[in-house]
Length: 209
Ligand SMILES: [Zn+2]
Image 1 (tube, rainbow, N blue to C red):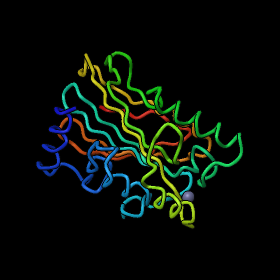
Image 2 (tube, helix red, strand yellow; image 1 turned 90 degrees about the horizontal axis):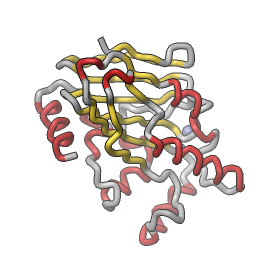
Image 3 (cartoon, protein in one colour; image 1 turned 90 degrees about the vertical axis):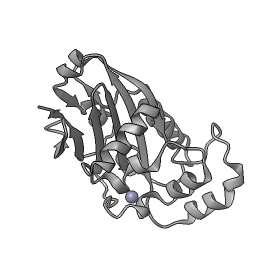
């Protein structure tokens, strides 16, 4: 992870990225007060990421054998709602979607590159029993009453044994799991170049070369 953090910093310093206000700038201190506060307010701190139902953003950086990938999305795209789950089926939906994320295969690269997910970072969209944020209760109440919307973000850190064989990224699993997702706006850095493309339900694969 240190290597990856270093990589991202290097790329940012090299001026190759417009991701300065993005997931990569957050660091990985999920548990810290600072990050928590940031996440509580969803996308409001991210002018570049308008909260648009049906649309999600993905960013990734390929640096030699390492890939760091981040997805930001309105919760609506995966849950169909953005309030704290009340009904049993809503709670079930949250659990299922978090499980999908933590399986690490919502987005994948062509198998010839032999990429393995080393680390998955995902935020809890709602206060749940698995996360003790008791001291933040006032914050969550504020969120629940917030009339706005709510986002989710996750990151995959991958290591590829054969990066020369990297050809495609496949987001079909993401589109199958996230029923309301229509458009995935992708930005990535690879081979010293920055690229952007939009994927959708018809076109779920991205060519890296
Ligand atoms: Zn929304």
